[in-house]
Structures are given as C-alpha cells and as structure tokens.
Image 1 (tube, rainbow, N blue to C red):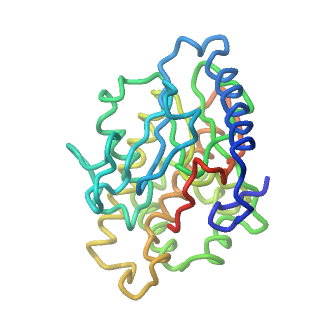
Image 2 (image 1 turned 180 degrees about the vertical axis):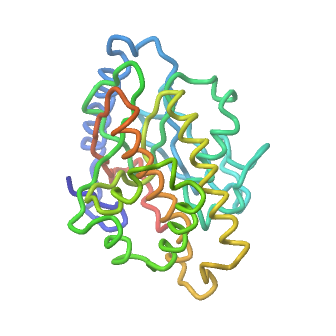
Length: 282
C-alpha cells in the first residue's frame, strides 16, 4: 500500500458528480461494515479529528457512527457544533507538540460522554479508513498498515531527529522494558500503522489508553527536562513528541496483533479532494 498525504496531492478539483459518486461508494461500504452480523446492533463511534473549520463529506455528516472532535481546541477558536478536547481532564494545550494524541486522550478520559461505545475509532478530517471489510466481533483492532523500505528506526531517522526517539526509547525500556518483550523487535520491522487512525473494541482501547498514559508520562518528563530542543526546530519538527507517540501507537497495534487480538484487519487510508473538503496546510 502506498500512503499519500492530501497535502502532497493536488488533483484538479472534482466535480459535484464525482463527489456524489465517491460519497455513494463510501456510504455503501459504511452500511456493509456497520450492518454486518454481530456488529449492526453494536454501539460504534468513530471520532473525526479536526483542527479548523472544514466541511466533512456529506455522507458522514449525519451518520450515527461519526463524531467530529476538535483537537487542540484550547489553542484556537472553537469550531461551532462539535465537541473539543479541552474540557475536564485534558492535555489540549499540548496539541501542537502531540498532534491527534490530545484528542485520543480526551476520549479516554471522557468515554462515557460518547455513550461508552462497544467500538471506538479515530479518523482525520482528510484521512479515512477505507471500509472495504466488515468489522468482526470480539477483540479487534482495525488499522492501516504501511510497509516501509527501511525499518522503523531508520525510517524515523530519515524524516526526523533520531536522537529524540533514542532518548524516548531509553526511558521507555528502563521503565517498562520487562512488560514488552517484542519492543526491540518492532523497531527492526518494516511495518507501521499510520496516522493514529484505528478502530478498537472497548476493552482493547482501555488497554491502549493505559499504555498511552505510560508513554505520555515519559514524554512529559522529557519536556520538563528539555530533552528535545523544540525551540531550535522548525514548525514541522517541533511535533517531535507527536511523531514519537504515533510510532508508539503503532507499536501497541503491532504488540496487540501478535499477542492479544483475535482478529486483525488491515485497511487502507484514503484522502479525498472533493468540493466537500478543505485541504489543510497542517
């Protein structure tokens, strides 16, 4: 699978007819997915990350499954009509450093406000899991698998500052290495589960959220110790902790797939450029 970022794709603007056709295809896949045996009656919520006002595909706007959520709302003007990650217990102020993790954290601390769904998932306003396969019952993770030419460690080195990842790995292994026997193996793999986009059953998400808090405690300690020289980085690389946390989410999926999950479904991410979308610059 080749993963493309919508920022890097600038096709001619689609016509309303093409947009409608794409919307119909998406809705057919949604219906097949969420009406499948064992899942049709389940409570499923897919949170859609937004950072600024934009119009979602029309087929998603009123669908019972999708819940738009503004990530980093404390840092910007509230988007009317949707929930934000800045109420109650939250880490919204760190969004520019942690990316979508602030919204995922909010969901973990406010799960009941979403109706305590049986399945919880996360998409971006411009990246959606391709609903080519039905969800299955039981302990599952649905995620998008990206095969990389280089292993995880070297891929990070290629695009980011490797010393930041090394510092995190050292601290993680010192505190939790005994809990995750396959941690070193993961960094030698060529598999990454990208973009913090996934679906998990409730029990698996609770495990992930507990794991996420362990990772964040290390990140916040690194921030306090000024381990990563954020101020000397450009706007993109200042998100170093977010890139590290994306890899740690990928590791959890890798780890759970090997050891905990009954069914694993890999699905592609799609980016759409239709009149219903505003391509972000973030």
